Image 1: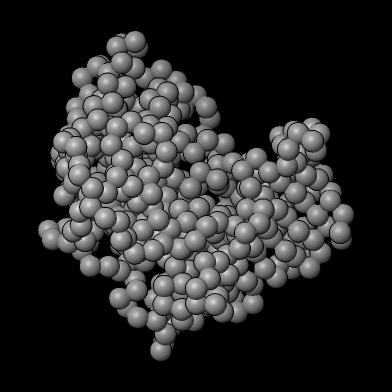
Image 2 (image 1 turned 120 degrees about the horizontal axis):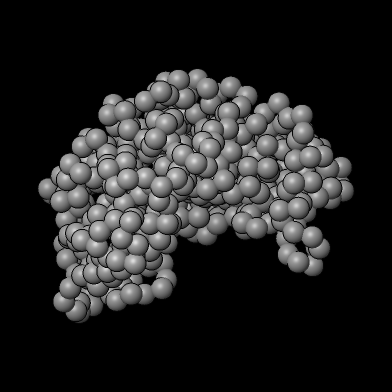
Length: 444
């Protein structure tokens, strides 16, 4: 790798992270089958279906295997791949493999990279196994289920010199980059707080047992999580078109704090220039039953508050920047200088962002990493061996923010954190909060 973890931390601590964009010819040109990036997919549910289509449509890729513990989803993904190559014989052959156990994909020497879109509790084990086997990794957000796993992945990427992209694709959306560039360049003055809008923390799983139809390897679905009976909220059968509720439960996810928080807290980190660092204190809400109000403190001054609002809302001494998907507002001295929320505002989001760049960021000293397409950025970096826009360090540290916030909710205790060492400060926290018990034979 041309950029190590150590040099990334040094560079990220500086004022800017230089954009990295390869010419389109590099990623879109016709290639012979031997030149293509051979990929396997681990987890083929709703999120993976979109990712599979995106990777198939990049000529640099060739998908040769899919893995899922559910027969219906696994077979559907296999058929999609085979139908794609049947219609396009110049792009690949319709002989996609399908398996229940991810280790079959990891063990294949002909596979260069994997896309992992499993439930959160099943991210880290296949990620590290893939890295150890010499494969590059695209893994969905949040990158990990707990803090210890985030550190383990960051260490493994550096040790095995691989490329990892976290699926926090908001960094590849122009509205978020422009918003963060305004903040980083002082357009709204010194930042006092950031409000991030997402739902509640995770809860313990107390779902009753349901009868399960054949075709799901339930023991493998649980993997390292505690043994419990089947319930359809955790792994709905059939080709459903919704995101399953496993993400609400602590054993498998972290509620909306890790689900949407992994997106919006990531943007707060970007705007504050904290990709190589993180909060130093985490405070729970005053009410122990509250599901919002937890606060991350940076440099003992700037607050990032979990609330309900615009999406990500930066407050500075001279103005405000608000951003969400497809929405953007820039205020200064009480006047809205630019904005697009819906068609009633007139114009378009693209025109608004271009105007802001031309008017307020033309001579900006801080230029953030520019990625016009999240999948393309990963593919570019696999070829160049550079860090992608949401590398393991970006994804890992954003996940840590989510996990620490959840621990403040779970334990209703102020947490003092050492972001450089990624450990609790003296006389704070409990080491058990950083990890979980792993059901045999699985471990990190």
